[in-house]
Amino acid sequence: MSFTLPHQSRCIVAQLAEPDRPRFFAGTSSVFNGSGAENELRLLDFDEDTNEVSSQSFAHPSQIRSIAPAIDKADFVFTVSTEAKIGATPSASLFLLSALSTIDDKGEKLANAAGSLSLLLRIESSNSLKNISNVFWDPTGDKSRVIATGTNAVGVFAIDRALSKATLQSTYSIPSTASSDVLTESIDCGKWNPHNTDEFAFAAGHSLFGLDLRAPPTTSTFSIPYAHDQCIRDIDYNPNKPYYLATGGNDGRVRIWDSRNVTKPLKDLNNHTHWVWSVAYNKFHDQLLLSSSSDCLVNLHNVVSVSSTPFGLIRSMDSDEEGLDGIYSKTTDELIATYREFEDSVYSVAWSSADPWIFASVSFDGRVNINIVPKEVKYSIIL
Image 1: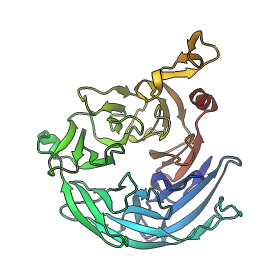
Image 2: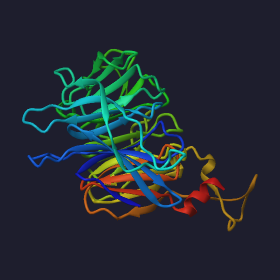
Image 3: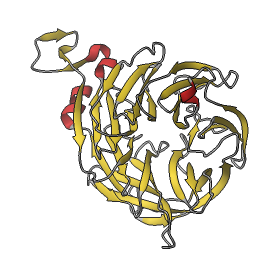
Image 4: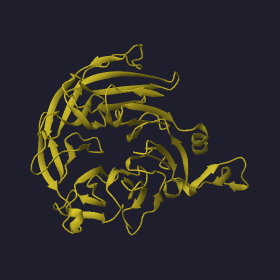
């Protein structure tokens, strides 16, 4: 299913606090150029039964670079944005969404109406945290602590109980043990470790680091100096296997790492022909891994050999191998599907938080595609 945003876009994420409906936030990043066009945060609802998308739009004052919905509150969301004026620097804003307008008694399908955003607090870029690019909520759902990444550092902020003020508690820069060429790079992406909330991973140039948030600002839990041949664009932790994480980079590769043994990647996937902008593990079935790229493609990978699936087995009626509970066959890693519906760089992919078989992606020209994992793949996993 496709949906077209009114302007260019770089980001799409799941509405994490919505357990029942496949909903996604997408943000536009238009430069006004005097046209009077206005950027927006758009909430999209996908109805699998009717294959329809409904939405609610929220006018946004500036270009949206990234979106971070609250984990346990459906109407709280951070955006990182930049005003369309010379010399403007990006800032992070926490908004409260107005009530949703729906067209049914169950409050499910959205009414394709307009809502409003109420600003609660703002985090400005500064000398200690230049050019903020992303905000990350504490994975436990604790709203008193967030992390923001800038080009030169990672900042940990304390948020007061009223959600009205954010105070910078500490900053972490690229470890001094890094090679000199890495130290000249900027921080492009990061991810909070869901298995250990005292660890945060980030990438600077082609190198990957893990920060110990309890330790001095230069202490790292792991480092991979040349994780990719070129700049790393995205990171995602395996939700089921501690220490495992995936990276995507400008070399067109997706790599899976074990942070306890960083001499070489566990998997090296080379199915893209240009920059990989986004990687995303399925939050329930970690053998499913998405990637998107400037080659206009979205790839769905099966990486069962480095997943938490016991023995890498699936049920198969054609197999001669007897398992304890039936007939099984071993699976192998493969490229499950390639989605070719886009005509521009695909900057972001996201799995639904309500349905593990639904995912969305967005390209720079504002096209959103919502797809469902092929039935044969789904049944091979759950049966």
